[in-house]
Amino acid sequence: MNNTIPAIIFDNIEKNFGSLKVLKGITGEINRGEVVAVIGSSGCGKSTLLRCFNRLETIDNGRLIINGINLSRPTVNYNQLRQLRTQVGMVFQQFNLFPHLSVLENMTLAPRKVLGKTPKESAQLARLYLEKVGLHDKASAYPEQLSGGQKQRVAIARSLCMNPQIMLFDEPTSALDPELVGEVLQVMQQLAAEGMTMVIVTHEMQFAKEVAHQVIFLDKGIVAEKGSAYEVLTNPQSDRLRIFLSRLQ
Ligand code: ADP
Ligand code: MG
Image 1 (tube, helix red, strand yellow):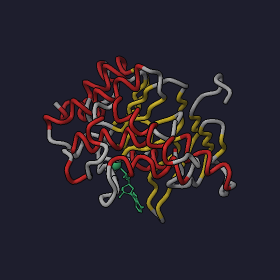
Image 2 (cartoon, helix red, strand yellow):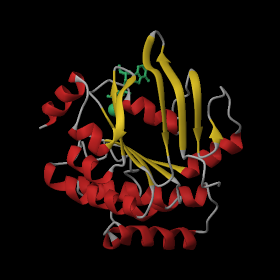
Image 3 (cartoon, protein in one colour):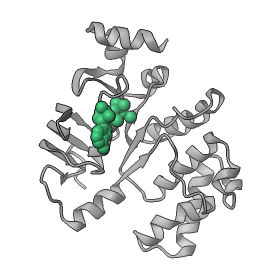
């Protein structure tokens, strides 16, 4: 992949659910290695934007190019969709681990089925990433035996097994007890430090301030403010962002 083109280009994208206009012309650019925090009130379209980035939703208008793959068209060919699925990882608030599979089985499933890796190769890879998230001793555990923080670290490690170039996080710590948030943010901070391109929907403003390069504030389906994390979070221009930030404190 050509490293000079941005990881994600979105230009005036629109998304409607029936008569509900959710994204009303969202424009921006995310470079390789960049960490972007998407913030905004509940219902403003954060998850929808993220879901467009890996084509869990299709856009209705505008231009969207992910890792060189043009998702603007109503149809995308099978090969491109397959590429997209391996190149873009996603981590959800509710972890989405398969409850009937062990940690190792959760992690080796996609590498075997999608990338065609052997059981041995995929298990080696899984153990490598479990080690990375500090859970090397949990390979044979089942999700129900893990804490929320551990489940989320497994979910991140599972995504990493696909060797993604972009990672999307949708409120990865919102379902966690407060004392478990730090261990997940730490893993994400490490990923960021290693140069992973990351788009993170989060309410963790301290984390955003420390780790994000760019912050996008969505308000009712438009980009109300965007810029460096420092600019946006310490010097908000609009009342709406000021109010939003003050409510989080
Ligand atoms: P956020 O993540 O910022 O809380 P969402 O992107 O989840 O917001 O939702 C934005 C709006 O779109 C909300 O009004 C929500 O109810 C609506 N919405 C989201 N997904 C769907 C869907 N699949 N069908 C209909 N409406 C949806
Ligand atoms: Mg959401």
